[in-house]
Amino acid sequence: MSFDEITGIYDLAQVIEIFANLKKKKIGQQFMPIEEFEKRVYSPVPAELKRKSKYMDEDQFKMKYSETNMMRYI
Image 1: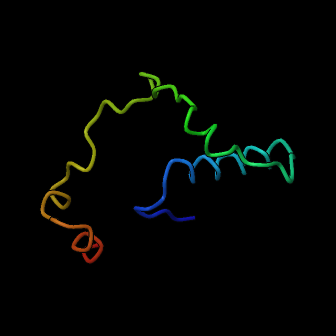
Image 2 (image 1 turned 135 degrees about the vertical axis):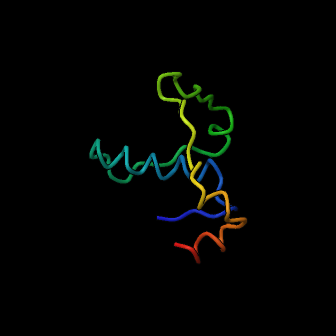
């Protein structure tokens, strides 16, 4: 599964809903209409799950200036 810059949170919510319905063995369920989705309120990430350490702090990450340059390095 891949997402790009035009993928919205509504698309992601539909994917999550598909997997949730599969887990509950609810096949053929209708998706939430976009009007209801826009009113949905999400709770913030709990403090115990938030990252506290630095990441991608190694020198090889600092020397790459673009995603393309990083992919060539990898």
